[in-house]
Length: 384
Ligand code: AMP
Ligand code: MG
Image (cartoon, rainbow, N blue to C red; front, side, top):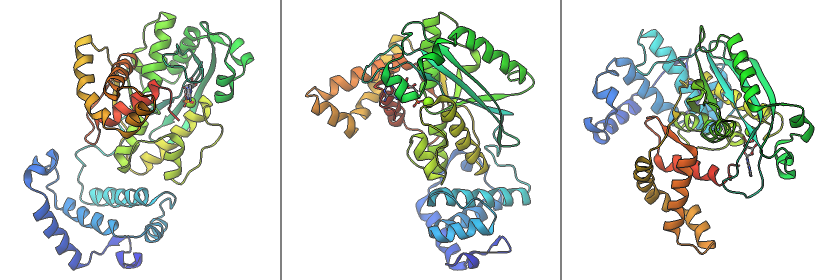
Protein backbone atom coordinates (compact mmCIF):
# COMPACT_ATOMS: atom_id res chain seq x y z
CA UNK A 1 0.00 0.00 0.00
CA UNK A 2 1.39 3.40 -0.94
CA UNK A 3 1.96 5.66 2.01
CA UNK A 4 -0.23 8.39 0.49
CA UNK A 5 -3.18 5.94 0.58
CA UNK A 6 -2.37 5.15 4.16
CA UNK A 7 -2.72 8.63 5.46
CA UNK A 8 -4.28 11.72 4.01
CA UNK A 9 -4.29 15.05 5.76
CA UNK A 10 -2.49 13.24 8.58
CA UNK A 11 -5.69 11.25 9.25
CA UNK A 12 -5.31 7.52 8.87
CA UNK A 13 -7.61 5.90 6.34
CA UNK A 14 -7.76 2.21 7.09
CA UNK A 15 -9.16 -0.06 4.35
CA UNK A 16 -12.21 -2.04 5.50
CA UNK A 17 -10.69 -5.39 4.54
CA UNK A 18 -7.82 -4.87 6.92
CA UNK A 19 -10.15 -3.83 9.75
CA UNK A 20 -12.03 -7.09 9.37
CA UNK A 21 -8.82 -9.08 9.28
CA UNK A 22 -7.58 -7.39 12.39
CA UNK A 23 -10.79 -8.04 14.26
CA UNK A 24 -10.83 -11.70 13.32
CA UNK A 25 -7.22 -12.11 14.32
CA UNK A 26 -7.91 -10.39 17.60
CA UNK A 27 -10.83 -12.66 18.42
CA UNK A 28 -9.10 -15.88 17.56
CA UNK A 29 -5.62 -15.19 18.91
CA UNK A 30 -6.06 -13.33 22.17
CA UNK A 31 -8.10 -14.85 24.95
CA UNK A 32 -9.10 -12.51 27.74
CA UNK A 33 -6.58 -14.14 30.09
CA UNK A 34 -3.73 -13.45 27.69
CA UNK A 35 -4.56 -9.76 27.50
CA UNK A 36 -2.30 -7.37 29.41
CA UNK A 37 -3.54 -6.52 32.91
CA UNK A 38 -4.37 -2.94 31.96
CA UNK A 39 -6.65 -4.26 29.20
CA UNK A 40 -8.40 -6.68 31.59
CA UNK A 41 -8.82 -3.83 34.06
CA UNK A 42 -10.56 -1.81 31.38
CA UNK A 43 -7.89 0.88 31.20
CA UNK A 44 -7.81 0.55 27.43
CA UNK A 45 -11.59 0.43 27.05
CA UNK A 46 -11.87 3.78 25.27
CA UNK A 47 -12.68 3.21 21.56
CA UNK A 48 -9.59 5.23 20.65
CA UNK A 49 -7.43 2.21 21.59
CA UNK A 50 -9.21 0.04 19.05
CA UNK A 51 -8.59 2.69 16.43
CA UNK A 52 -4.94 2.84 17.43
CA UNK A 53 -4.59 -0.89 17.17
CA UNK A 54 -5.92 -0.74 13.61
CA UNK A 55 -3.53 2.07 12.77
CA UNK A 56 -0.65 0.06 14.22
CA UNK A 57 -1.67 -2.91 12.10
CA UNK A 58 -1.47 -0.73 9.00
CA UNK A 59 1.90 0.70 10.03
CA UNK A 60 3.23 -2.84 10.46
CA UNK A 61 2.51 -3.54 6.80
CA UNK A 62 4.61 -0.68 5.45
CA UNK A 63 7.99 -1.22 3.82
CA UNK A 64 11.02 0.73 5.01
CA UNK A 65 10.72 3.18 2.09
CA UNK A 66 7.06 3.75 2.91
CA UNK A 67 7.88 4.23 6.59
CA UNK A 68 10.53 6.82 5.70
CA UNK A 69 8.11 8.60 3.39
CA UNK A 70 5.51 8.59 6.14
CA UNK A 71 8.01 10.01 8.64
CA UNK A 72 8.93 12.75 6.18
CA UNK A 73 5.26 13.52 5.60
CA UNK A 74 4.64 13.76 9.34
CA UNK A 75 7.83 15.80 9.79
CA UNK A 76 9.39 13.12 11.94
CA UNK A 77 13.03 12.04 11.87
CA UNK A 78 13.44 9.68 8.91
CA UNK A 79 16.61 8.03 10.26
CA UNK A 80 16.80 4.61 11.84
CA UNK A 81 15.98 1.01 11.08
CA UNK A 82 12.54 -0.27 10.14
CA UNK A 83 11.30 -1.18 13.63
CA UNK A 84 12.39 2.17 14.99
CA UNK A 85 10.55 4.05 12.23
CA UNK A 86 7.43 1.97 12.98
CA UNK A 87 7.63 2.81 16.67
CA UNK A 88 8.09 6.51 15.84
CA UNK A 89 5.03 6.66 13.60
CA UNK A 90 2.93 4.60 16.02
CA UNK A 91 3.85 6.97 18.81
CA UNK A 92 2.94 9.97 16.65
CA UNK A 93 -0.57 8.61 16.14
CA UNK A 94 -0.85 7.46 19.74
CA UNK A 95 -0.05 10.93 21.06
CA UNK A 96 -2.30 12.62 18.53
CA UNK A 97 -5.30 10.33 18.90
CA UNK A 98 -5.17 10.18 22.70
CA UNK A 99 -4.95 13.95 22.89
CA UNK A 100 -7.87 14.32 20.51
CA UNK A 101 -9.94 11.80 22.49
CA UNK A 102 -8.79 13.47 25.75
CA UNK A 103 -7.59 10.13 27.08
CA UNK A 104 -4.57 9.86 29.40
CA UNK A 105 -2.55 6.73 28.64
CA UNK A 106 -2.62 4.43 31.70
CA UNK A 107 1.17 4.10 31.90
CA UNK A 108 1.77 7.87 31.76
CA UNK A 109 3.00 9.48 28.61
CA UNK A 110 6.04 11.44 29.79
CA UNK A 111 9.24 10.70 31.64
CA UNK A 112 8.25 11.70 35.20
CA UNK A 113 11.45 13.63 36.04
CA UNK A 114 12.78 17.13 35.42
CA UNK A 115 16.18 15.77 34.44
CA UNK A 116 18.08 12.65 33.45
CA UNK A 117 21.61 12.49 34.83
CA UNK A 118 23.68 10.35 32.47
CA UNK A 119 26.83 8.90 34.04
CA UNK A 120 29.54 6.77 32.44
CA UNK A 121 32.57 5.98 34.59
CA UNK A 122 35.95 4.97 33.25
CA UNK A 123 38.11 2.92 35.58
CA UNK A 124 41.58 1.44 35.92
CA UNK A 125 41.80 -1.92 34.17
CA UNK A 126 44.08 -4.62 32.82
CA UNK A 127 43.44 -6.82 29.85
CA UNK A 128 41.80 -10.18 30.66
CA UNK A 129 41.95 -9.90 34.44
CA UNK A 130 38.82 -11.10 36.22
CA UNK A 131 37.94 -9.70 39.64
CA UNK A 132 40.15 -6.66 39.04
CA UNK A 133 39.79 -3.98 41.71
CA UNK A 134 38.66 -1.15 39.44
CA UNK A 135 39.12 2.43 40.62
CA UNK A 136 37.17 5.21 38.96
CA UNK A 137 39.44 7.51 36.95
CA UNK A 138 36.89 9.56 34.97
CA UNK A 139 33.61 10.87 36.34
CA UNK A 140 31.36 12.58 33.78
CA UNK A 141 27.71 13.46 34.40
CA UNK A 142 25.56 14.87 31.61
CA UNK A 143 22.38 16.70 32.51
CA UNK A 144 19.43 16.23 30.14
CA UNK A 145 16.45 18.54 30.62
CA UNK A 146 13.43 16.29 30.03
CA UNK A 147 11.03 19.13 29.21
CA UNK A 148 13.32 20.66 26.58
CA UNK A 149 14.71 17.23 25.66
CA UNK A 150 18.29 18.45 25.34
CA UNK A 151 21.63 18.46 27.17
CA UNK A 152 21.79 21.56 29.37
CA UNK A 153 24.89 21.11 31.52
CA UNK A 154 27.61 18.67 32.49
CA UNK A 155 30.03 17.81 35.27
CA UNK A 156 33.41 16.32 34.44
CA UNK A 157 36.46 15.34 36.42
CA UNK A 158 39.29 12.83 36.30
CA UNK A 159 40.07 11.00 39.57
CA UNK A 160 43.44 9.90 40.95
CA UNK A 161 43.55 6.16 41.67
CA UNK A 162 45.25 5.15 44.92
CA UNK A 163 45.44 1.36 44.75
CA UNK A 164 46.95 1.26 41.25
CA UNK A 165 48.23 4.82 40.71
CA UNK A 166 50.07 3.81 37.53
CA UNK A 167 47.65 3.31 34.63
CA UNK A 168 48.27 0.21 32.53
CA UNK A 169 49.11 0.72 28.86
CA UNK A 170 45.91 -1.20 28.08
CA UNK A 171 43.85 1.26 30.16
CA UNK A 172 45.41 4.35 28.55
CA UNK A 173 44.82 2.90 25.07
CA UNK A 174 41.24 1.89 25.87
CA UNK A 175 40.09 5.09 27.57
CA UNK A 176 42.43 7.70 26.07
CA UNK A 177 43.14 8.89 29.62
CA UNK A 178 46.77 9.89 30.26
CA UNK A 179 48.89 9.32 33.35
CA UNK A 180 49.26 13.07 33.89
CA UNK A 181 45.48 13.62 33.76
CA UNK A 182 45.00 11.26 36.72
CA UNK A 183 48.19 12.35 38.53
CA UNK A 184 46.92 15.92 38.73
CA UNK A 185 43.35 14.97 39.66
CA UNK A 186 41.70 14.75 43.10
CA UNK A 187 41.06 11.39 44.70
CA UNK A 188 37.58 9.91 44.25
CA UNK A 189 35.99 11.08 47.55
CA UNK A 190 36.87 14.72 46.73
CA UNK A 191 35.60 14.41 43.18
CA UNK A 192 32.35 12.92 44.46
CA UNK A 193 32.00 15.88 46.83
CA UNK A 194 32.47 18.40 43.97
CA UNK A 195 30.03 16.44 41.85
CA UNK A 196 27.44 16.57 44.65
CA UNK A 197 28.06 20.32 44.99
CA UNK A 198 27.39 20.68 41.29
CA UNK A 199 24.20 18.63 41.74
CA UNK A 200 23.18 21.01 44.52
CA UNK A 201 23.85 24.01 42.29
CA UNK A 202 21.44 22.44 39.76
CA UNK A 203 18.86 21.85 42.55
CA UNK A 204 18.95 18.12 41.74
CA UNK A 205 17.09 16.18 44.38
CA UNK A 206 15.68 19.36 45.95
CA UNK A 207 13.52 21.54 43.69
CA UNK A 208 14.28 19.39 40.64
CA UNK A 209 13.66 15.67 40.31
CA UNK A 210 16.05 13.46 38.36
CA UNK A 211 16.87 9.89 37.46
CA UNK A 212 20.38 8.53 36.95
CA UNK A 213 20.85 6.82 33.57
CA UNK A 214 23.73 4.53 32.57
CA UNK A 215 24.67 2.12 29.78
CA UNK A 216 23.98 -1.21 31.52
CA UNK A 217 24.01 -2.11 35.21
CA UNK A 218 27.76 -1.88 35.78
CA UNK A 219 28.50 1.80 36.35
CA UNK A 220 26.61 2.01 39.62
CA UNK A 221 26.69 -1.60 40.75
CA UNK A 222 30.27 -2.40 39.98
CA UNK A 223 32.32 0.78 39.59
CA UNK A 224 30.64 3.13 42.05
CA UNK A 225 29.87 0.36 44.51
CA UNK A 226 33.43 -0.97 44.35
CA UNK A 227 34.95 2.51 44.55
CA UNK A 228 32.87 3.42 47.63
CA UNK A 229 34.07 0.23 49.35
CA UNK A 230 37.69 0.98 48.43
CA UNK A 231 37.39 4.60 49.58
CA UNK A 232 35.47 3.51 52.67
CA UNK A 233 32.62 5.94 52.01
CA UNK A 234 28.87 5.39 51.98
CA UNK A 235 27.31 4.60 48.62
CA UNK A 236 25.39 7.79 47.67
CA UNK A 237 21.66 7.52 48.18
CA UNK A 238 20.90 9.25 44.86
CA UNK A 239 22.75 6.52 42.94
CA UNK A 240 20.87 3.56 44.44
CA UNK A 241 18.33 3.43 41.60
CA UNK A 242 19.12 4.00 37.97
CA UNK A 243 17.91 3.58 34.42
CA UNK A 244 19.68 0.80 32.57
CA UNK A 245 19.41 2.46 29.16
CA UNK A 246 20.16 -0.75 27.24
CA UNK A 247 17.22 -2.40 28.91
CA UNK A 248 14.85 0.55 28.39
CA UNK A 249 15.91 0.75 24.73
CA UNK A 250 15.36 -2.99 24.14
CA UNK A 251 11.94 -2.92 25.81
CA UNK A 252 10.84 0.17 23.96
CA UNK A 253 11.98 -0.77 20.45
CA UNK A 254 11.35 -4.49 21.01
CA UNK A 255 14.87 -5.64 20.22
CA UNK A 256 17.75 -7.35 22.03
CA UNK A 257 19.91 -5.37 24.43
CA UNK A 258 22.97 -4.04 22.69
CA UNK A 259 25.94 -1.70 23.06
CA UNK A 260 25.97 2.09 22.56
CA UNK A 261 27.29 2.04 18.98
CA UNK A 262 24.58 -0.42 17.89
CA UNK A 263 21.82 1.50 19.64
CA UNK A 264 22.96 4.65 17.83
CA UNK A 265 23.28 2.86 14.49
CA UNK A 266 19.77 1.45 14.78
CA UNK A 267 18.56 4.99 15.37
CA UNK A 268 20.45 6.15 12.27
CA UNK A 269 22.91 8.12 14.40
CA UNK A 270 26.68 7.81 14.76
CA UNK A 271 28.91 7.87 17.83
CA UNK A 272 30.33 11.36 18.29
CA UNK A 273 33.83 11.47 19.81
CA UNK A 274 35.87 8.55 21.15
CA UNK A 275 34.42 5.33 22.46
CA UNK A 276 35.48 4.57 26.09
CA UNK A 277 36.11 8.24 26.76
CA UNK A 278 33.69 8.66 29.69
CA UNK A 279 32.50 12.10 28.66
CA UNK A 280 31.87 11.06 25.04
CA UNK A 281 30.20 7.80 26.11
CA UNK A 282 27.91 9.74 28.47
CA UNK A 283 27.06 12.38 25.84
CA UNK A 284 26.19 9.66 23.33
CA UNK A 285 24.06 7.78 25.88
CA UNK A 286 22.30 11.09 26.52
CA UNK A 287 21.60 11.38 22.77
CA UNK A 288 20.06 7.91 22.82
CA UNK A 289 17.81 8.94 25.74
CA UNK A 290 16.81 12.14 23.93
CA UNK A 291 15.93 10.18 20.80
CA UNK A 292 13.95 7.61 22.79
CA UNK A 293 11.97 10.33 24.56
CA UNK A 294 11.26 11.99 21.21
CA UNK A 295 9.95 8.64 20.02
CA UNK A 296 7.60 8.51 23.02
CA UNK A 297 9.59 6.37 25.46
CA UNK A 298 8.84 6.97 29.13
CA UNK A 299 12.19 6.67 30.92
CA UNK A 300 12.14 5.45 34.52
CA UNK A 301 14.64 3.70 36.80
CA UNK A 302 14.57 -0.05 36.21
CA UNK A 303 17.40 -1.30 38.43
CA UNK A 304 18.57 -0.68 41.95
CA UNK A 305 21.42 -1.58 44.23
CA UNK A 306 20.67 -4.22 46.79
CA UNK A 307 22.56 -6.29 49.26
CA UNK A 308 21.94 -9.96 48.66
CA UNK A 309 21.92 -12.18 51.70
CA UNK A 310 23.91 -15.38 50.99
CA UNK A 311 20.63 -17.35 50.96
CA UNK A 312 18.91 -15.03 48.47
CA UNK A 313 21.96 -15.06 46.27
CA UNK A 314 22.09 -18.85 46.23
CA UNK A 315 18.37 -19.13 45.51
CA UNK A 316 18.40 -16.54 42.73
CA UNK A 317 21.57 -17.74 41.11
CA UNK A 318 20.52 -21.39 41.07
CA UNK A 319 17.25 -20.32 39.43
CA UNK A 320 18.96 -18.40 36.68
CA UNK A 321 21.97 -20.66 36.23
CA UNK A 322 19.93 -23.33 34.51
CA UNK A 323 18.65 -20.77 32.01
CA UNK A 324 22.12 -19.34 31.51
CA UNK A 325 23.58 -22.73 30.75
CA UNK A 326 21.52 -22.99 27.62
CA UNK A 327 23.20 -19.90 26.26
CA UNK A 328 25.46 -21.08 23.47
CA UNK A 329 28.30 -18.58 24.01
CA UNK A 330 28.84 -19.71 27.54
CA UNK A 331 28.64 -23.37 26.60
CA UNK A 332 31.02 -22.83 23.69
CA UNK A 333 33.43 -20.94 25.87
CA UNK A 334 33.33 -23.61 28.51
CA UNK A 335 33.79 -26.34 25.94
CA UNK A 336 36.89 -24.66 24.63
CA UNK A 337 38.24 -24.37 28.15
CA UNK A 338 37.42 -28.09 28.62
CA UNK A 339 35.56 -27.37 31.87
CA UNK A 340 32.27 -28.74 33.05
CA UNK A 341 29.83 -26.11 31.73
CA UNK A 342 27.37 -26.50 34.62
CA UNK A 343 29.92 -25.98 37.34
CA UNK A 344 31.74 -23.11 35.71
CA UNK A 345 28.66 -21.10 34.69
CA UNK A 346 27.15 -21.55 38.12
CA UNK A 347 30.27 -20.23 39.82
CA UNK A 348 30.31 -17.25 37.45
CA UNK A 349 26.68 -16.39 38.11
CA UNK A 350 27.15 -16.46 41.87
CA UNK A 351 30.32 -14.37 41.66
CA UNK A 352 28.79 -11.92 39.22
CA UNK A 353 25.71 -11.37 41.36
CA UNK A 354 27.58 -11.03 44.61
CA UNK A 355 30.01 -8.62 42.99
CA UNK A 356 27.43 -6.59 41.13
CA UNK A 357 24.69 -6.52 43.75
CA UNK A 358 21.78 -5.34 41.67
CA UNK A 359 18.15 -6.16 41.48
CA UNK A 360 16.00 -5.41 38.49
CA UNK A 361 12.60 -3.83 38.62
CA UNK A 362 9.55 -5.19 36.90
CA UNK A 363 9.44 -4.19 33.27
CA UNK A 364 7.10 -6.49 31.46
CA UNK A 365 9.50 -7.50 28.70
CA UNK A 366 12.55 -8.08 30.85
CA UNK A 367 14.08 -11.49 30.95
CA UNK A 368 16.21 -12.90 33.74
CA UNK A 369 18.28 -14.56 31.05
CA UNK A 370 19.28 -11.22 29.54
CA UNK A 371 20.03 -9.76 32.98
CA UNK A 372 22.34 -12.65 33.71
CA UNK A 373 24.07 -12.35 30.37
CA UNK A 374 24.61 -8.64 31.04
CA UNK A 375 26.11 -9.35 34.42
CA UNK A 376 28.35 -12.15 33.23
CA UNK A 377 29.52 -10.19 30.25
CA UNK A 378 30.69 -7.44 32.46
CA UNK A 379 31.93 -9.62 35.24
CA UNK A 380 34.25 -11.07 32.65
CA UNK A 381 34.92 -7.61 31.19
CA UNK A 382 33.76 -8.53 27.75
CA UNK A 383 31.42 -5.63 27.60
CA UNK A 384 32.25 -4.30 24.18
P1 AMP B 1 33.18 1.67 29.01
O1 AMP B 1 32.11 2.46 29.69
O2 AMP B 1 32.70 0.64 28.06
O3 AMP B 1 34.13 2.63 28.38
O4 AMP B 1 33.95 0.87 30.14
C1 AMP B 1 34.13 1.36 31.44
C2 AMP B 1 35.34 0.72 32.03
O5 AMP B 1 35.22 -0.69 31.95
C3 AMP B 1 36.66 1.03 31.38
O6 AMP B 1 37.20 2.25 31.82
C4 AMP B 1 37.50 -0.14 31.84
O7 AMP B 1 37.93 0.02 33.15
C5 AMP B 1 36.51 -1.28 31.83
N1 AMP B 1 36.55 -2.02 30.55
C6 AMP B 1 35.77 -1.84 29.48
N2 AMP B 1 36.08 -2.70 28.50
C7 AMP B 1 37.10 -3.44 28.96
C8 AMP B 1 37.89 -4.52 28.44
N3 AMP B 1 37.66 -5.00 27.21
N4 AMP B 1 38.85 -5.04 29.22
C9 AMP B 1 39.09 -4.57 30.46
N5 AMP B 1 38.38 -3.56 31.01
C10 AMP B 1 37.40 -3.01 30.29
MG1 MG C 1 32.67 4.51 29.06
